Image (cartoon, rainbow, N blue to C red; front, side, top):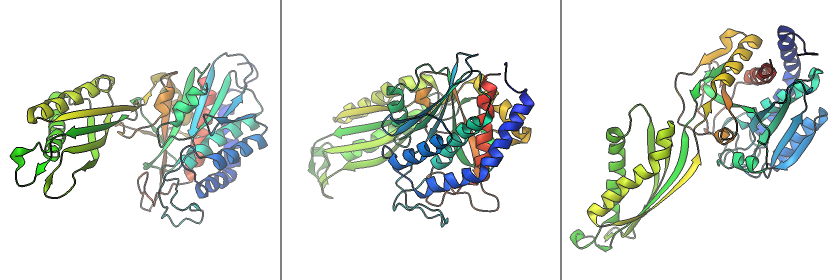
Length: 399
């Protein structure tokens, strides 16, 4: 790697630059936290991020994938590969109750999932390489993505061509159960596939006093829910988790009228590729059986959401080794279990191998509220850890 410093000196320089940037990183994150924007409406967030990047002399492509940003960091040309770094920018429709001095100024909106931290890590990593003064052997493409919370932004970005010529991709997501300053590493499955399901059951209306003269859609809907939950434990592989949750039921007109139609809406989560491929037909099999047994008809609308995030082994090794070398071996926390939460980072993995690490944001001696909670607060120590880990991993990708 002609023109590059040796490994230890390079990592030391990356860390030193990140430490010098730390006060600015905190300011950036607090600004973003105070000005959240919903999915697909990240106009001011994108403009602010573009201003930060432009002030470092980095070329910014705006309005990519609607409100996304792309920054191309050109390498020396020694290596033809291109590595992408993805961070997301959107917030949630949650009223903040954190009592922070820089709490959301937008009523009903909050960065309750840490995307303000993610954006700051992406910006900080780009800023580190802008100041490094030594070109990397290959190219780096920074992606600042909108609309992760509605599982649409990654598809918008891919449709805009951001994965063309990309050989690998890295991502980050905060986690409050990991102490601030730690890095969570998991090989293989990190998050679940998440699909949407809607089942409409149609019976025949009748008087509540004479159920034998009707076909009770509410009762049949209850049988569908119960049958699916029971069938999971007896017909699905117990080592391949599957969760079906119906969070909404609509049906009925009056207390004394048997309902002729009920709609069940829910979410389907799984980890294993075989389950992901077969679960729509499996669900329909049981819905059909129940409805036919009791004389009802049905309509099943199964909508694919996002697949599971499967961390590439080689890239995970690179990220872990980079974090250990730059921050010490005790920075790593091995994650023994995947999450059944979902992440549209998985959409990028349909085009190139990738790896997402967990960034610990847990507080010390204070309650740690979960993601999507109105009192969710992060340990800002995580900003330096996130930037150093990501920048070191980008550097190590070329070694």
